[in-house]
Image (cartoon, rainbow, N blue to C red; front, side, top):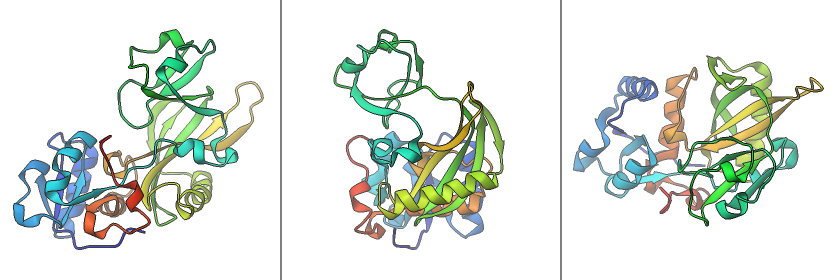
Length: 261
């Protein structure tokens, strides 16, 4: 788990979002100061938490003494097959170019191209041949939920989509039940940091009508929309995943952000 540490300042990206505004309000209610990440007083170094994008995080991380926890690129491939619910492969852009079947593709962690369905490998955008791509079987998610995990438990959650369209609502009981199973499996091992976001979805087979829950992906908690989740509880996850590097536990140190962010 991530060891708790006093937080004096929440450092935010200057590009405000609805989530950053909610987190700012939650932080001020706790007596935590809120500053733009590049305007944090020098005296606050080592007592900050951060919410914002990975590029800015890399720029200010050392100066603010941050420990930014990042899920590994091979997270989905590391999961038990019953939690994934579909075929997922990691390959290079050069290898993916040779695919002749339709597939869903996304960059493992960065935003080098927009995730989506491609009819074959020739439809991929121009990428360096060695660029990593995550390729998966095409499935239909009837609904998708975001789980904010802390120490192997679902600390906050929200539905965010139905059939691929934004549709925000409280998490359902079924989603929370599957989420508890996922939380125990991925943070107890651990396959991800002790504070992280994991998205899950209900796969619907259009031919048979059968449904099954599956993990969609993992994300950095300090760069994830909260949707309908309780902002105060989301702030707990942000502090645990992007707080002082001095407070990061030994178990979480292998998830500290490196050159890729």
